[in-house]
Length: 157
Length: 110
Image (cartoon, rainbow over all chains, first blue to last red; front, top):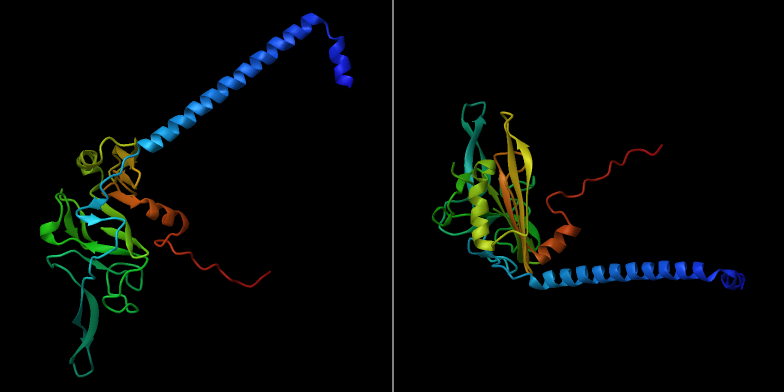
């Protein structure tokens, strides 16, 4: 009520000025809205523009069932010392055999590295959810990769 | 090469590259396969001899996967290519298998 009274007392010239200002503000708001919708349309358009890419890397397909077999496990007797009678003492080391002609994978070992065979996972257990190391056979290794202790991951220099 | 398996499906592959020395080669290879990158940037890296290089940080985004290439990592002699599916991205945003949560130090209460 107070406001209406005030408004009614305003001179016509001021009302015209206010009307012009409001019109300007309204116009600005509209233009902002228009810009926002343009951006929105643009992002939608760019989202739609995204293409599907080849989901394979060196012939290994992503998004599909992991079908690479586990690398062959092997046991090695390593001399760990000699006893009191100077007879050699051996320790059995479990590790993965690499150098085959096919891709294979290694589980992380008990320490979280890809060096030894994990003691808690039986051979040929399917991988459900985990990080694995994938071994590249020599003849299938891509250009610019060379072997290292961590597998085919380093490039020739 | 490292693989992330989620629910028996391979969702991420990470290839280590030779770092700054060969980043041009890898960028060319990736551009040939995936086209022009969605994002290409570079950051200054310093090698052990104090020389400063530009290391690429490049990404490609697709409807089914993302590809990230880093010319070098902490070591300038090692870079990485990361190809990850949308499901892999979702998984990684919620879980980090490579950094398992550490047990909190449960000392005596004050």
